[in-house]
Length: 546
Image 1 (tube, rainbow, N blue to C red):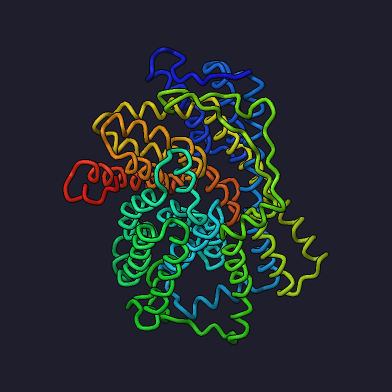
Image 2: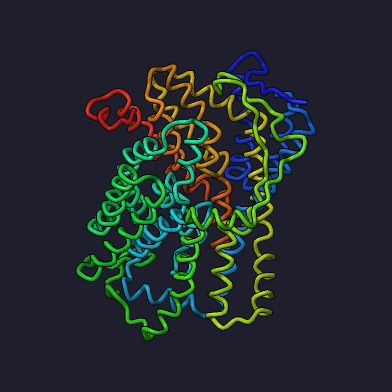
């Protein structure tokens, strides 16, 4: 028996929108204002979404229960699977003493904490976003930053701010590929349009990141390095997205950015070297870490293995091969194709699929586990030692896994009950200002679901329909959904939990949210303004792909 979503159950769109937003308000309020622990806040938010979906939006209770289970399973796999295995690799590095060598070897490149942040959080993080996505870059970079001496709040918040500009092309272009699937628009045009929005912010984000950490003066003291990191990311990002496609944009751009900054640091260093409490005159540009080249190479080998394996794991040809021998597609009984999305959210009534993809072999988390096992043997761990360490890691991240499962259940409830569409339709009422508010709709989608891919699936069709009604380019607004969404990545609950887990700062998720919230909404608004200019104002209109 099918159920048709209802988008205005009260008969007053503003009241229906307010009610639909209550689960988000409850979740964020519990985290940021009441300072409730993340797993309890997530469970409270999930309970509120269930109550509202069933009692106000008339979703059948059985479908609500199945949606909750479906979302929780997705939270554990593939998202939780990534986090567990990244932290496992990190823990083995710490136990083997190699992480300390890695940390101190970076001092040989630069002792300036600002430059370390730039290379690790922005450039290195972008590589992992391009290769794997789904929480991997935040988990890796936050763990490295905390090992370098950054405070937990800084390591968490700054990793989240840095993981923005690359997100639309993350996981080898997955968000835009998904966007093409739900809109029917040309993938190359979507890639080109995103590549005419994001490079401006790829230039801005490194400056913003350093401003958030060191203030304006501290940022300007290292502006050559910041400019190099941004420019050598933005230019390849534009060229590849416009002339090749979305697949390798982040990977190539990140490598170019890292090479540019490292090369610059062999020729230049700031006059004042910044420690973690400010300028320290007795610090040299580079430290003599006392390790041989062989010891430094051994320290970096696990992360090199991780980079190579994750990149190979994400290549379409390898992913397709692994899927062909391992994937299980499990339709959720009582939910799959039984919920109908209807106009004006979609052009015609469309059944919502609910299929759990158990791609246990091709999943990014499995690639990370393979890299961790290979690295474990390289570091001298035996099979039993690795199993014992894995059990310790699983116990350590247990609350984080519960939180992620509950958070994703909220996101799935929002989608399948139609709460997301109710909020989206409110944005679509903004008329001439739709380019701005449509961009913020993408931001909201990522904040709710934790995924730019999921936001594109949720709102891509709505963006296309609304753009046509308002007289805008559907390609512009579809791409704007993805590009606005990248700024919501730093405040989604999933990413915040990943950051708190990687830095072992459990119970402080509300502090992280407060730290990054202003940066998230401010950058999202700037993207909205830029899209508005592209829609109406010359010469920005010349950038639009129709």
